[in-house]
Length: 212
Image (tube, rainbow, N blue to C red):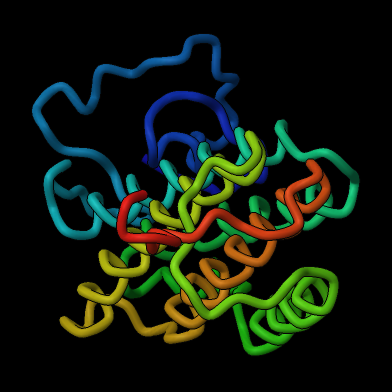
């Protein structure tokens, strides 16, 4: 069986989103090849669906879905355009994490430049919102709440990827850095969207009085 990476992602399960056979037109959205509890990696290997690698890939996929809901809820183009760029990066991350060790470099696009891009966006948005050092309660706006949900899933994805990296199952440290910065970006975007919705000051987690 011969595999090729494509930017066209079909809804056939996490890894089948990124794989198709050479010279074969896909005419259905399932293969049945994973009914034994395993799935193909980007390469010649298969892995258990409950393996740490597949758990990481699935969590990254879940994060991307949450980012899509957040993007659909944004009040303006600024947030939506940033999130769309992030979602495209996430697909590349998912591909590299889903690849076998010998094939991972073929799918590597996340590097220091993408980290710097995220940091630039964080600094830009941060300058437009009221700074806070306190924990906030999600829900001041619909888009803000979805951004916070996406942030929490990205943090879980970061933990899953960290496990792979620490076990030397993943080489690209930039992926970890990207996910870490992404959670910070989503936090400031939450504050930004709250402000766009008319909520300049976030609802803090701490009670303002003991009787609250």
